[in-house]
Length: 169
Image 1 (cartoon, one colour):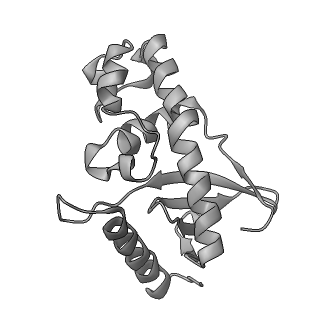
Image 2 (cartoon, one colour):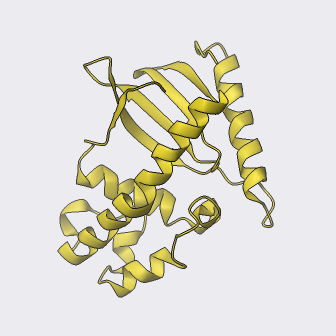
């Protein structure tokens, strides 16, 4: 990834959305990617003042209470963002990245050793990339290991790169 800086200036609403959608999704098994991740992040958020509706797919940003916002955004800084940055660093070093052309423009996909898939887009300056999302795509097996997640993520990244979307490795 050379010396580019990753910008996470998506705003609190987007950060909140990504934590709820990805980091709190048990099926994505972030515990395999982030060794220091506490157990039951969703339960901890409920204990910190979040209502269950604030942690579901139907939440409305204006109605999320301040203690819930603070807790979820803390989880973004503490766990989600470091895992994404690690994925960019290790994916770049291992050659597990590609460029794709989407309807929204050029994007880069990285798959880190932690099996986190990161999607970046260029910012107005060519030295900065903006984090679009980071996720873990679960294999079908409930007993999946991090290696299973990694194989699936690399395969999907290579498929996207080879489907004529302008991808390069």
